[in-house]
Each structure stands twice: as structure tokens, then as C-alpha cells.
Image (cartoon, rainbow, N blue to C red; front, top):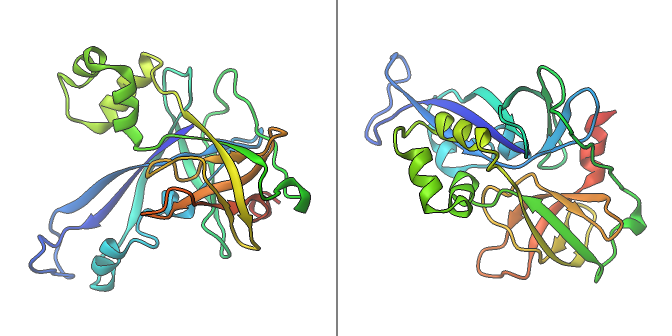
Length: 240
């Protein structure tokens, strides 16, 4: 599932910020990954996907000077579905970079709920893992669609929402799957080497039994052998 998050911030023009004015807004289209876990439409993603300004130093500079950050909307797109589904923010963890959203309007057709495994022996250093997500977001999807499809989809519009809708209509929204191994298991993170990058945030990390053991949340720049996932126990706490 690839959730689309749109957030809006008062724009500073990089020169001056007037906190008393009603000037133009800075609107950002932010992409990330999430996965469905409950029949009531709840899905898991990262806090920094649900609230892109959280932990973002560049946007923090605006907020520290009086800007207000908020999400305009959330739209979730599922493989095989021709339309996106609106979602609402459900809960945010106070302990880790995880959050839950809730779909509005029911589950997509042929949807699959993922099983979570937070047992201590479900995550073992050296064991194989699989990561699913949307690294590089819309750019990665368009690159896999090929130049002809990309030209057709983007030729008449630069609107991100329209481009994503066209991709969904042609059933081109499909996740990327990478494999690797667990490097280390700590109290608050799982270290693994399955490849990912920006846009893959919020993706499920599966163990060899097909259970979700973590939620991808960060990469270590300059060292491809270590990506980081939040242990799924932190996300599971939000579902109670």
C-alpha cells in the first residue's frame, strides 16, 4: 500500500516570515509505505510519514518561527486497485516512529491483512528477512512502468494526485520486494540489510515465516549494510 500524504505550511519565501499574515501556503506531496492489519481498515506506517514535519529539520525551522503544520488529506493506493481510498490519522506512538491510519469507506477488494509477530524469538540475528515497500515513491513506480507509459501518464498533467490516479487506473502501483538478513536486534530497533530508500518508510519487514516483525523507518547513509526497523511490538500497542 502506498499512502499519499499532503501537508500544508505557511510559506516563508526563504527571506521573511510574517506569522500574522494570510499569505500563500507551502503544500508538499509526501509519499510513504504502509500495510493493512485490521478488518476495520487500520493500517500501520511511520509517524514521519503520517506527519512529515515530525523529525524534519528543514520544516522544523519554519515551525519554530511560527508556522503551523497539518495534513490536508491522506490517500492510500493498493496494488490491483484502480482508485485510492481516503484515510484518517488514527494513533501516533509516543515511544517509536510508528503510527496508524484508518481507511474511510471499507477495505479494498482482495485485500490481505498482515500478521504481526512480536515474540522475542521471531527476530533472530542472521535470519533471512523480506522487505516490501515503495522506495523513491512515485518516481520508482514511473521508472518501472517504462518510458512509453510514463509519457502517456504524465504528458497532460503535472498534478501529483492526477498522476497517481492514472497509475492506479492502469494498475501500475506495485511494491518493490528486497531480501536480506537481520544484522542485530536491539530493544528499540532491528538492524537489517534488505535494500530500501526514501519512500520505503513504513514498509513491513517479514521474517522467514512470513510474519511482520518490524516497520522500516530509516537508512544509514553511507553504509548500505544497515537499515533500521521499529520492532512491531510498538505498532501492535497502537492497535489495542
